[in-house]
Length: 79
Image (cartoon, helix red, strand yellow):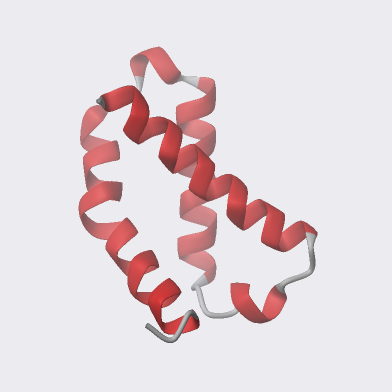
C-alpha cells in the first residue's frame, strides 16, 4: 500500500503543477504558498529518493496536509 500512497501524492503534486502551467492562478490562490511549495517538495522527495523515503514524512503529509487540501478543494467545488 505504501507505493500507492506515494504515487498518489506525486499525482496530486503534478495536478497542481498543471494548474500552474494552465495559468489557473485563481484556483491556486486558494492554497497557501507554503502548502504549494510543501506538496512540490514532498513530490520531489518521493520521486528522487523513492526507495529510502521516510514513512514518517509520508504519514505526516497524509494525516495533516492532505486534509487541508481536501477542505480547500471542497470549498472550490462548493461541496
